[in-house]
Length: 279
Image (cartoon, rainbow, N blue to C red; front, side, top):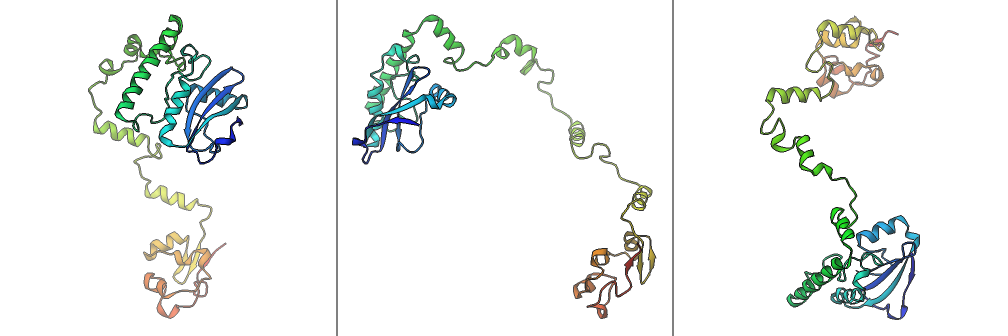
């Protein structure tokens, strides 16, 4: 940030008045800030911020005045703004008004000061609008001070009817049935191909048989095609004899929760008791 300032008045200040110069557009911007010159604040003017974001290297700031009392900052900004020729607002300056317009500038004023602020704002606004040409006034009116370039044709009465807004819409005042809502919900939830359907017992068995990880298991109760088949036969979970647990010692907790083991087998491993998988 390029900056010029007078260091003689920098002691114990609450805020400051600044002026930016855009070397490319040859335009100025005056503003105030409650804070320090090192806190990174740049300014709040809409057009100033847009220009600065495009070419910050072209901007140079100069501190016009350091203000010691916070309640005087807006007053001092208005003082500096009052020096701007009304015909230069929006042209030589990014400022559009000769009164402070950034942040809350009214709530801290006395009733008399608020009245004066309102009168000055009204006068400055009237002077500004009377200083521009009718062509520029029309352009600014249509594009919101020249900043909004969006196509607004969609707001015309003809296009509103073509798009069937409000009462012109065929579904105006109607609601979907619960059946339709539920059907739509299902279509947009999870697996739409088999949503709501279940596999037959035969299909489940075929899937199990074709599982590449399916291995026969030797148990004290016989040989079973898989651990799942063994679990169904004995009616109990067989997680304790899965391949990665065959060498884990049986605990009291497992004996209490499983039909596979008895109390005298605590401390032994399933492999020691005759459980193994056929490769």
